[in-house]
Amino acid sequence: MGLFLSLVMAFTLSVGFVPPEIKLSGKEGGFVDGKPFSTQMIKGKVYLVLYVDPDVRKLNKNLIEILKKQNFDKEKFGSIVIINMKATWLPKFVLSKILKKKQKEFPDTIYVKDNNKVFVKKWGLKDDDYNVLIFDKDGKLIYKKSGKLSDEDINEIISLIKAHI
View 1 (tube, rainbow, N blue to C red):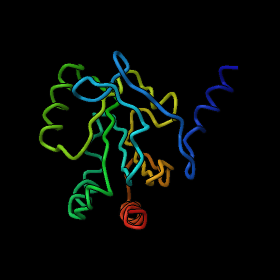
View 2: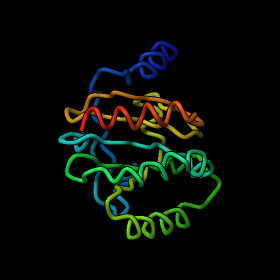
View 3: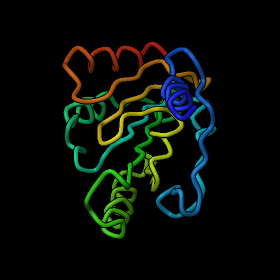
């Protein structure tokens, strides 16, 4: 039964579908300021969502640099970085301090803490990795990839964002 549930959970996040809602609050995590977070907010514009192990946060630095240069309209495009807080050896209080600083430095990016690998469990995202997701205006997943992105992957991401804005 456990294996069956694990398989079902691993397949819940599929391109072409709106994934099930995830809520993070209290001990589960939430926004950097402690307020509850819900994936219901991933609607109304195109969103790039990064689910990241802090230990590999620089893995796709080139994607971030290229996205900055695109200067997408903030009314049509948004970005959310969800930190897998349990995927690192760094203490939570250190990570929280870093995230608060990042949120002030990059106010247009939404930073979220996942304290208990909820996205790994409920959406089947890769643990201890760098997950890249793109959602259209209706909250439907249109791109999903984990790990190091190639130049072709980055070109595809930019094209998808432009096509859906």
